[in-house]
Image (cartoon, rainbow, N blue to C red; front, top):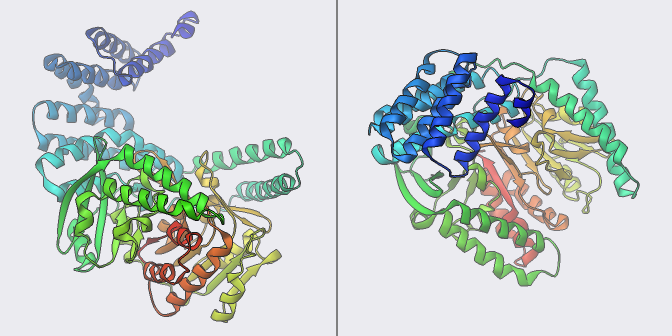
Length: 567
């Protein structure tokens, strides 16, 4: 504020004041002075014609509500609500958020839900104009308050079914439609090729102990160029997508399969148990405690990936029991004996669900949303898809399962050594019935769409998979960190697994923790044995875990892998 005031840049000074007031409110401050400051900023922004003016009025109303000044709050919120009918998408969403808060203050749950629905419709329309999945994911953050208001209102007035609908309304929405595929852009393709070459040279230099700052600078520059070109793509899909239908979900689940969706309200986990024709709600523990416990489990699994750590096994198992209490609570006793689909919130994506006692010996799959599971369940397998086996370089086990699987499948396409190059791998993966990729996985928390699998000519990244016409119907990623995802936006996930699901993949087996490469080989061979017998990925993975030796190393390896989707 001081810098802009000194430069006499009034527009920017006023916007900086808005950010400052937002920061003070977020830090828990609230006073009549803050309400007056927000209202003054709103008036000044309105005189400039700034689209941020409704945001300042909404902030003034929100602070007044916190203070219990209902008359002042109504006045400021009414001003903000005027923007809901026209203007840019963010201003219209702000207007509907103000309208929802007015309805909440008036005690009208129906009014809250209607305002939230209209506001999220605006967000959907805006989101679908964006071609890049990263931008779509980040845009959903704007709807977080609307979704939370709707969930709270539905919990009070509508029962578990309505809470499920609103939980789905803003969960993993990016996965509901494939990203816009880039045109045959020679500059983008050239940039991707150059990126792979530089990344491969940098990796080789690191392994030889040579300095790599120049290569890393060039890699970051190429990443910026690729990201810039993809972020500027415009979306083509219509905003009015496939709406979630509880009745359709229950019909697909039938009497045997249970879907467990975990919603979070005011920091506490709400368990929605769907199946046998109904939706039931149970209250579990605090999300923050579950996140802490999940980190402890991840640390334990990392330790168990190395021989000599058997003493850690009871500690990890005890953490699994605590996780079950926090995440499932009383719902754990209601799961029955059939297959279970877990739909966790984004912040719990790294939980190794097979470690939880009530889930350990059953057919278990994970999905980013109930809607995503439905789409995967209804995805038809290709009529003539082939089997593709890929072995990348540098694996401790040498990808030892691949030669054995090649002998089992006979006519499978095998890509290894110099043949496992990115263009050839992408060509063979497109439309395959089953793909097995044994390659080092690298997760990029700073830029999840550059998470990669190492091929002979460099990394194959999420951006590459998004160029497929149809990704493999089933895909098995047999190495570390392939199931790690970044929680982005409101409740979105970005990573290798979530890149594949909207592109036609109905099922993925991947790993969310470091594993022992040698211990993976028998697990993978047993998994494919189950698939040969006609089992689904989740069924085959359950049986493969049971077939492993009972030592800590192999148990931890089995727990680290999850089946995603519904194939």
